[in-house]
Length: 365
Image (cartoon, rainbow, N blue to C red; front, top):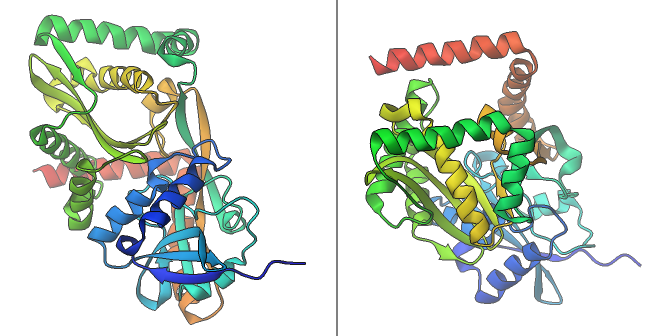
């Protein structure tokens, strides 16, 4: 006999009870996915987004009056929904117990959604995977064997990269002064320096600066002060003679460190400070009990050099019938198809990169 559909209540993330928060994170801890403890899927991340975006909601699934699962989302006009933090979140989906059977269209109706869009849906989200239209590698570093085992991996699979990073580390020390690394730096000045470097990089490369969007800037500030077992904002800083030269702000849980915003001082770019920062950060993460460092979706040569493997994330949208869903398709799918065309053709991709750099040069004048 098929179990009846769960009752679904819609609440704001800040209205979740202590019982909800504990169950949510327990469900993630026991999930059968490689990134089960990814902090972007924590209750605390959805709560933080809810504090900076009024359109954030959580569908609470209940059986016999007790919560059994959660679906965080953002609801825009015409019932167009998005994954929580879409644009900056690196892991998305619902938080459900194993074996729970749910009609995704029933869920959409309960949330008053005509569509739900995702671009970092984790593998294992069987409720939404049938609606994925593309998948992407998310490079990761497996630290279950500790940092020594990871260094052995680099020597075997990226020896030139590893040797160059260690050489740059020594050269920085000779020319810039003693190096100091802080894994969890509370200094707000270091975070401001990182944001300034990252914003300048976005402008220089012709890309939109996410920190120009007030809600993202507020979200980073809020998460920098968040320290929960399943979601802690972590600022890692590399200093040379007490001057910050590279930094990274990300989120970590007990066992997963999710990379988010890395950058460095352009004045010392010839020393490749980002490489040195990442090596120190991965070593510190291993020492702190982190099992997995997730670089997130996106092509970059340094990710391929550091990684030990890949997870898969998915892009797509679940749509219902009706004018709202059709409007969402018209707004999103032609653009998504154009992006896929550029990604899949090296010549078009190179031309797009050159165009962005030209735009960045014009902006800098």
